[in-house]
Image (tube, rainbow, N blue to C red; front, side, top):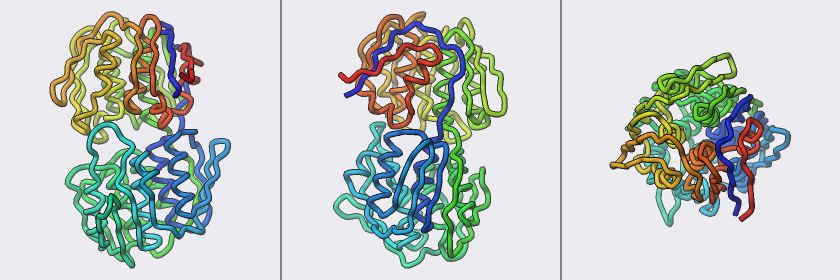
Length: 417
C-alpha cells in the first residue's frame, strides 16, 4: 500500500494546473448510456474512481477506451441492467447508472452504494424521484430494482438539495413522456455540466443554474463529444496550499466563478488574489487571519473543501469555527491534524480551531479523499518529516497530486510501504 513521505517547510511557488472535474465526469460517463453510439469526453484525468466507473460501464455493455486525456465510450450494445455490489460498494457514484438504465432499457438493478467513509448518505431522494416518474421500485437483498416501460413526466420537489438525486433524476426523465419539473434542484457546477452534456445529446432542459429545472421529454438522444470542466475542488485545494505558503502561487486551467465563496473566505484571511479568465494567483499574507466557515450547498462553501480549509485555519493567528452542515460526521481528519500539533476541538458538527505558530511532522493516516488532501497540505507546511499512510484515497480524486505539488516546490515521495 502506497504512502507519502513529505519533507515539510518548503515554500510553494510557480504555476500548478488543474485537471478535469471528477464529480462532473462520473455522471457524464453514466449519461453516455442514454444514446447508442460513441461519445467522446476530453480533459479526463487518470483517477481510480473514473477507472471504476469505466469498468462498470463495460459490464453493462459499453466499450470504454482512454488515452491522452480523452475517453471514448461506445454505448451501442448496452443491454445489461445490473450494477453489481463489488463495484458499487467501492464508489457510491455508481448509483448514477440507475437513471440512464431505467430510461434506456426500462430496468435497473443497482446495489446500494458504498465507497464513502464520511457517514450515512442515503439514496432515498433518488428513489422517491424515480417513483414519481412512474418507476416500480423494490428493495431486495441489498439491491435497488427499478422497472418502467416508459417513464412519465412529473413535478418533483426535493426535500433537500442533493447533487446526486438531481443528476440521477435528470438522466431518468430526459426521455420521459411529457414534461418534468424539478424543484429545489442542486445548482453545483457539476450539475450544470451534466445539463450541458444532456442538451448537446438532444435533451430539452431549461433553468440551468437555478433550483427550478424544466425538462421536456424527447424520444431520442445522440452521442456527442464534450470537453469536461475543470475540477473546482482540486483548484480550491491548490489555492489553500498557496495560502499556507509564503510565495505567490498561480492555479491555472480553472474556472474562478465556480469558487466565489472560497475566494471570499481567502480574501478574509488576508490573501491577495489576482483573478483572470482561467487562472487565479494567490499571494499569502504574513499572518493568516482566522475566518469562520459553514458548509452549504452551492453557491455556499463546499463541504469538499472543509478539511483543507481547516488545515489552513490550524496555522491562523487566532480562533476560527468550522461548521459542517452537509455531512456532520466529516471530521475524521481532526485527530490526524492534531497529531501534527494542530489545536482543534470538536463539538458535534462544529470544530473550534485555535491557530498554532508551527505544525510538526508526524506519521498519520488518511481516512477519506478530502481528508487526504488536507493532510498533504498540512504535511507540506509542517516542520520535519510527515508520513501519510493509506493514500489510495487521494488517488480517487487527484491525478498525480504529488507530481503537481513537487513541480511548484513541495518535496513529496510516493513509497510502497
